[in-house]
Image (tube, rainbow, N blue to C red; front, side, top):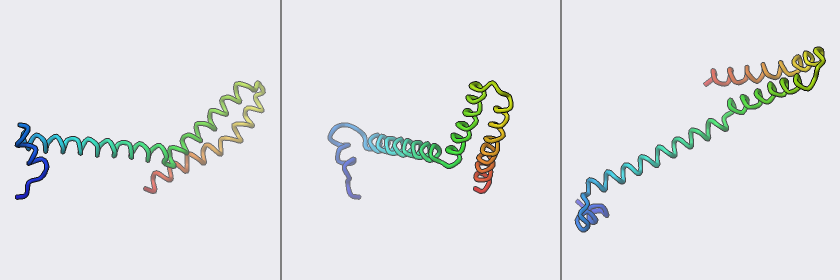
Length: 101
């Protein structure tokens, strides 16, 4: 069997080759899990469902801001009648998109 760097180093410094191999495997698996976590986080943050959620929250919050600034009940109702179809459309898109997967 051919010797590799781990086998050669194990004899000169008193460390066992099994310990070095286990340490190397641990570090490799740790980096692999870290990369998978960040990839998953990035995919979820930039997914279409999350962006639809953000747009829906912005539209709904604009309705509440408008309610705070306007005292006329009819103007508030007209504004909600305007943005409610947008909100329901975005929610329907998100639900339909997740069911198609």
